[in-house]
Image (tube, rainbow, N blue to C red; front, side, top):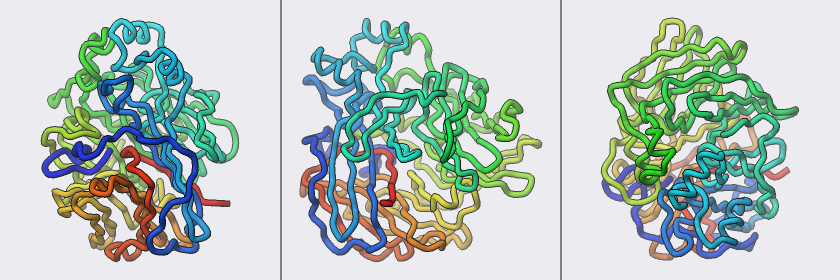
Length: 462
């Protein structure tokens, strides 16, 4: 999901470049402008819809596109990069058949068959998970697709021993628990998973949602999991009988409200649910225990409209705002106030503060606010904002914060990938996270424009 141009959705980008992968290739030396910090050593992995056109026609919806993983290795003053399609077993099956067999781009008859038999393709086009030295490409509601970290080659889908059907594209690690949490959707049932840093994954339990909806994200503290289920309700008959594309499968019901669901980790079956005024959340920032209540931070949307065009030009939509909520499950209280008025999305915090109170939040900014795409550092204590903006014609994605070598929160680097339409190439901007308004320390140029990516992960070198 990328930055907006003009008045388009902050989850959309203009059609300046062909967003499909131009050339798949393994790791190659990359052009470096500036100087890489000595302590920045590791690999940035990012994924997004890589094939928006296939078999001579566009996919029906970007979420249907096969993923393309772009990886950039940094260290010893040099960089190397690769871009590879997530070649699942189903992808190979389609290549042999020469046509779409999965997703809403397939024929209606094939879609109905897939729905009745449970066949689906794990495209790996939304996010990446690094867990126990293994790399997984994730999509909205399918099993993880494991990749070889060294080559990005596909190793096949996996259920990790616990996944019944789906595995969300937004796992969250709680540093204090040394555990990554995630969920999966089975109709109205939402399964809960725990992936410890050491040991086998566990199924924590499940709860029933008020309606079948797209639940894109959630958040975790060291004591609770928190969901906000917005009123984007699946139109079951449309989905089952493949009437329209994916964007037409959901109905926005603003009168229904949004349901807050709180799951205590110590007793997952004791779920608290209550309704609040309608809003939508694509991405949470963080959450932490705050006495008898829970503080939840997220990017709040007024509507679900951005779903219609998450990676192509679309209509105007409400601008997301960075909000903080006070959540008291016992009193069924969920009160929120905006922390920053400028539109922002795709938040990142110091991973060592995930699930605990953080001081700094990094967010992708959009042209409507900063006149250009870029990144901002918001100080949650003082409200101070530092920001850096790329040229207004460049297309940016989610900033990734990489901690430096010390213990100080917010000390490190921001890695943010951009497309330069005029040059027809992509580059990685390396920024000093403590002096964000300064020019980039380095720009690392890919030889071509890589497909725009949604999310990613940085893995430090041993």
